[in-house]
Length: 118
Image (cartoon, rainbow, N blue to C red; front, side, top):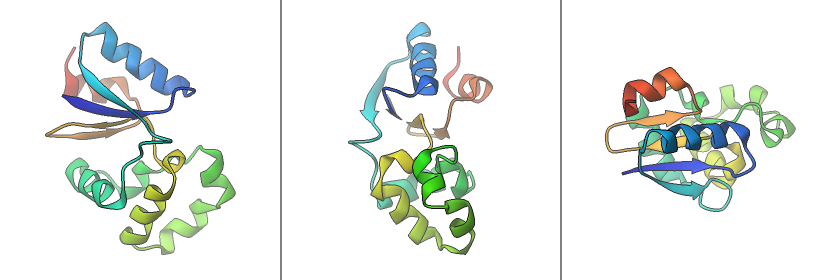
């Protein structure tokens, strides 16, 4: 079973969930705003993903821009970034897919096909 952290008003999340539903892929849905992962979980997800930590940030989000994180992140340690991500689910790139063998950030159909099959 995979877990999908998403936000109901996000059109990308809606598209991603439809993609899963259309393929009959079962998932547990979590609201990124109210059930966002803590810093320890985010660190584990980051390590498992093999992605740069910046890929976990919702760089197009209002909060990201308000906090001017594009300027601040380069000087922050990974631990500080995990704590920041854990402080507000709206900072986390969505949808965020967590499975036993992989973690995906955002909805890129080719990437999802590779890991989730069609």
